[in-house]
Image (cartoon, helix red, strand yellow):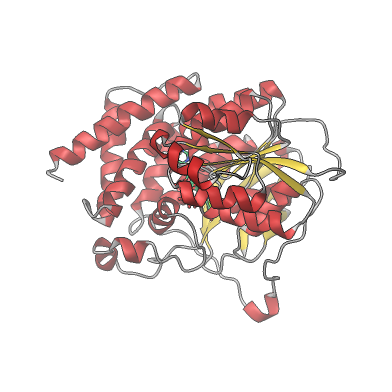
Length: 401
Ligand code: NDP
Ligand code: MG
């Protein structure tokens, strides 16, 4: 974590800018804000292309500014918000403007590497960031965190596992960490045979047993790629070495992360699987804000179980762990290839197993070419991201799909 002056408890409304306000995290954030009347003030909301959904959340939260990434959606957004006094903008500059508004905390909840530019703009402007958008750190973790340190910006982890670990760590000296485990529910295919997984449809991959999330992260959870991306995210957020990071499959999704220390003690972060809990923690930190999340009843749950991940049936996790160990540009390459392949799977152009197979093939191609240098800045990371996407799409075209 980056050092910054200790914040004081909420003496005045905390000003928020929400990037990705229309998504699953955006909606849970809205619920937390509405449930804590008077605690927060929403200065800006931003979304991708759904003008009606963005206008709705802008009105609901009384935002001052609404920014939509898709330039052609400007007219629709303007129409939806006519007469409300809410300022409207469209395109990449408008997104940056939303990210840089005078706010105490920017919520980074855009899906995918599309979140890199606006979230980085918030860091450059010196805004503290509550980060859900893990792809931001997988694509450009090094330069992103370096800028955060330079600016004295705090990156609060909103992803449930990292948030649990942040809470489990307390103020511990990171040097005394022996190991860090992120848990994975195992997704909808945890108990499926390899043959069944090979024939899995998008509908089946999107039917997550424990979490309701956006489509990309849900498919990543089914393949366990999500956990691999989260290991890379943890490396950057906590500054812990790759070899100390591990994964535990925990189907009940109650224990989200664990840390063991030099003396053998283990601390863990627990909560019901509801994103409102880590979201509220980030929004209120270092104070606590109440949420309507169901309370954890361990006696009712009865038993918590843990198992090792199966790399045979879930090769995406192995591919991601290889990229984590390789470092350099490999995580950037992994992330871009995975975004293209997940989109192709959702479009029914490739099978579920083709996701990991193609991501691995793309990573190997770049490895052979020696493209392993860590991108020194965000622009270079995005340039790698761009080339990998083109190569991944060409690969799909070459496969006749
Ligand atoms: P969703 O798909 O539900 O929402 C994505 C959001 O990003 C929407 O607001 C969408 O706008 C916006 N968006 C998409 N493309 C762009 C773009 N090019 N420019 C600007 N905004 C864009 O995703 P989630 O809320 O599920 O996930 C968001 C992030 O949080 C991801 O990185 C995910 O991995 C992470 N995360 C999610 C969890 C969850 O429970 N959902 C848990 C932990 C992490 P529009 O609606 O207009 O398309
Ligand atoms: Mg997570």
